[in-house]
Image (cartoon, rainbow, N blue to C red; front, top):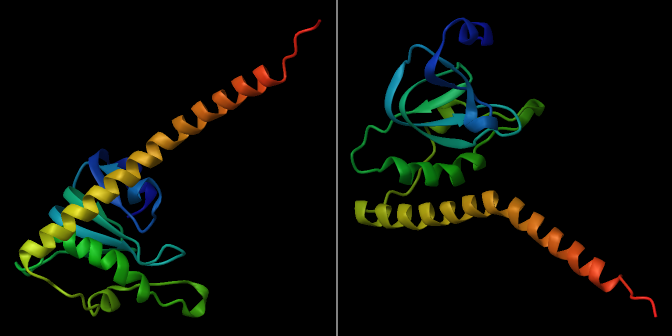
Length: 163
């Protein structure tokens, strides 16, 4: 799917590529190919093996890996977290361009605990992810506030009254 196709068919449905910027969204078009809960991953380049959760209606480019869970005993979010760790271990860096193709991704084995254990793991990791995201969004404001505080005290400490 080319950028020209996306431009000529602009719409509401995201097109995910193998890029990691902008959550992998290359653009939005007026049709979709997939609808539901999926995982995608970056198939090649420096970020090969980066895994994303996808839901709703969307399409993918030909260089974006796509995985739909068919087993009922594994939860999508659990597999997302498990593959986020395991996929990077299977990236082939030969020939200078890292790759993680579908055949390799399909052969990755992950331990599948009970549904209750998966839900517990998901809950903990979702909470930690939310904390990390709040730090990311709050950190620039905190840095700015500390910088203002520094300037205030610097100015107070270096302002001398004349006698």
